[in-house]
Length: 354
Image 1 (tube, helix red, strand yellow):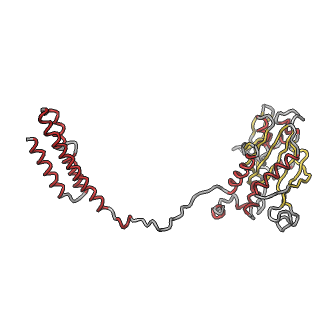
Image 2: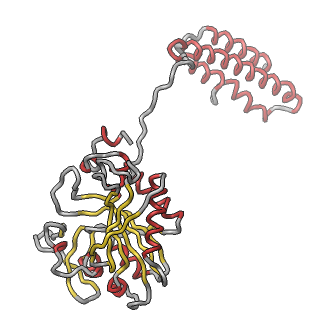
Image 3: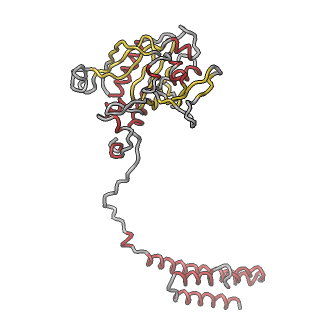
């Protein structure tokens, strides 16, 4: 009789479960009494062949037996898991102090660049970028740097060569072959940007530049600059002075004054060096500023009309100012770094301080 067989399976299964001692034996028990090919499962599959009257009796009995065996199996399995865990070893002292996890962070130069970009963006400037491997045209010619200018000498510029030790050349506008170099300034981006955009425009250009010179505490062959360009119909030196004072005052978190001194740059006319009031003594005079109250920071001027012509603008139609300063120099001033070589050294003992 099916009813008697079902009762026998239940009693046999419960008795066998009491003798299980290992997880392997428990798994074997599950296969035998609850598996797809178990006798109980086969009985359930055969319900379809029974009469309606038999189904009403055998069906509930078989299901109750299966559920009873499942509950017994789960209880034994849970006991196995309980006994297999070393709870003392797994215990967590929630009152113990946490262990700090070392996290990476941005390089100090990158932090400075982001801060500068944020300030200029708030003043309506766009961020522009350009290649570090430049052509002689954009790095010198378009910026009105004469062919005999000392900046073109090997002592200042890293000229690139091909594998066969011949200087690299490219065909620019089918006019002449010219050499490639590592850009010595971020100013080439000005011309590249103006070739594709019509004034009025305001851009800043952060980037890495290269100079072929000996390194010491204040000089490095690879460093970072930040270029600023504003072009329009009526841009004046007064606009530059206001932008510069606003930027440096926000950057240093206090009132900063700007002083202009006459100078010469091929790509600006007139040109001037600009100083800022000493950030340490507020212009009163200290050893850092050599008692002058001023810190020399960069060069600036009104864009030379020949640069506008190189960018495709009609001479005399627009005017604007351009100025640049060393991002590396700003980082040294802000973080009191005394040796420029530390910044690009890759020494984690130095980097982790910022």
